[in-house]
Amino acid sequence: MAMSGQMRASLRAECNQLQATVHIGKDGLTQAVMQSLDDALRTRELVKVALNKTVGVTAKAAAADLAAAVGAEVIQTIGKTATLYRQNPEIKGKKGDPPPWRR
Image 1 (spheres, rainbow, N blue to C red):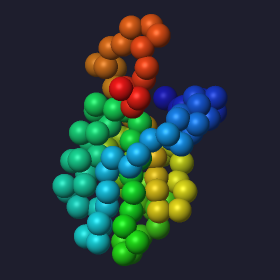
Image 2 (cartoon, helix red, strand yellow):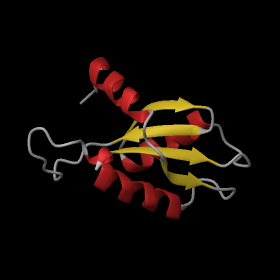
Image 3 (cartoon, one colour):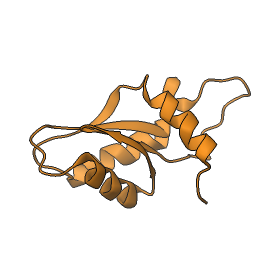
């Protein structure tokens, strides 16, 4: 199911307040990074990923690889930072509750 432009725009606005949850070091896209991102997406849905300056890959390429590996969508990439989203239907919230990434 493709994400609507309106949904993507609202998630992009949310990205501004997020701190990076997953950090990619000089070793690049390791299995540990993939696992860490998968766990973060499961609990928060919207996750910011920061790439170290020494990583030999662009944020866009890393974001595309990560999204494909964990079944997420790339919301945006700016500089050495990428934000990914994957909905988790198991996260239940009452109407009016903040989204999981703000809790």
